Length: 272
Image 1 (tube, helix red, strand yellow):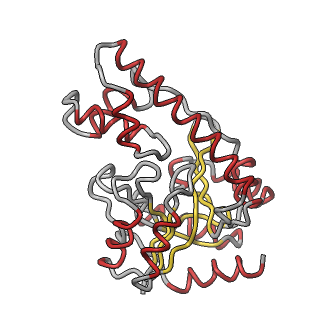
Image 2: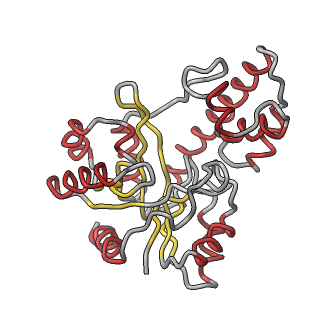
Image 3: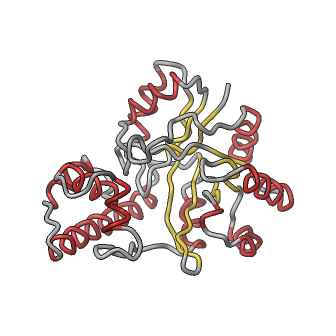
């Protein structure tokens, strides 16, 4: 049975609760999933409890943001110790920064006459890590836009009048945080970043894998990154990067990997 190792919940910027994620995974016929919320591990325990009742394996994970040149680069951490005090301290700082960013975005929107209430943004985040999708949903519910996409394209996306830069780690810092929490660092959707020449340097920092299979990787891109993973002896991973209705048309189980790949990932964790 297949696995989907890139899934978000309402703990970050998805519209699906951890329990709903588990239900969707079972309906999709999955055997294993990874909860990889942005800058938070708050959804892992709920997902694990729900999954235990239906025989689904949940790999505890996280997705951290960094910057390479002018591009945002994300790193997935698999099999992290999500109770690690140092990791929790890092994530608390990221959460506080996200909340500040959300407030500043709201202020910018209000200053250009696109008025929304920051309390509504917080409500939509349900106490989790505030992200731009929560602002986009607040804009949608307030009738300021007709879709999440329009919110990003018109107001809060890169270059938009209400865009606010996010505080980001360096790739080395992201990898280090994951490794210190006992996790396996994986370069997420590398096609976005276009920094293949830096992969050898990232390996020196501790990079262990590449997300080869992703909805935005077409056949040519997938083949390219699979070849790179083999060349450098890196683990191959993949998943849907599902965010519920935030990413329309992307569903849990849309992109999967085999049990064999999960077994290789597990062996690396067991031997670490």
